Length: 172
Ligand SMILES: [Zn+2]
Image (cartoon, rainbow, N blue to C red; front, side, top):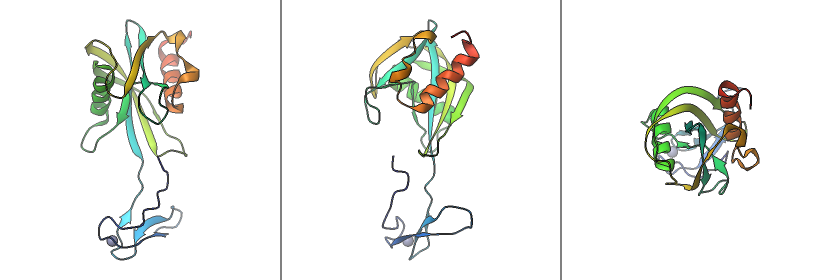
C-alpha cells in the first residue's frame, strides 16, 4: 500500500488538493484549496488469529498480493462497523473454513513503513474442517517447532508467532 498517496482532487467538491501544515509538530495534511476538506491518511486495521488443530498451528499460503505464495496466519482487514474480534473470526472462516471463538490478545503490531496495524488474537476452533478457501492457495498445520520462518509473509506474522510460542511453547 502506498504510504503517502498524492490525491489531486477533493473527494467532496472536486477542488485541488494541496499539502498544508495544519498543526505544528504534525505531518502536512492533504487539504482541499476550495472547501478546506482535510483528507486524513489513517492507519488500516487488520485482524488475525493464531489457532491450533490437534496441537498444530494453522497457516495458509497467500493466493493474492502482496507476498503471494508466502505463509501467513488467517486474517484480513477490518470493515467499518465491524469489531476487530468479529473481523478476525470472519476472516478465519473465509480463509481456512474454521469457526473460531476469539480468545486473548497475542499482540498489536505496527511499523513506521506501513499504514497497517495488525491485531492478533488466540482463537479456539469451535467447528469446521480445515481447508483452503478465499485468498488461500493451501492450508497447512505445523507443529510449533516446524514453523517455516523463512517463508512467512510479513514481519508481523513472525513477531506474533514468536510472542505466541513464548507464551505457550517456551521450550521451542
Ligand atoms: Zn473540496
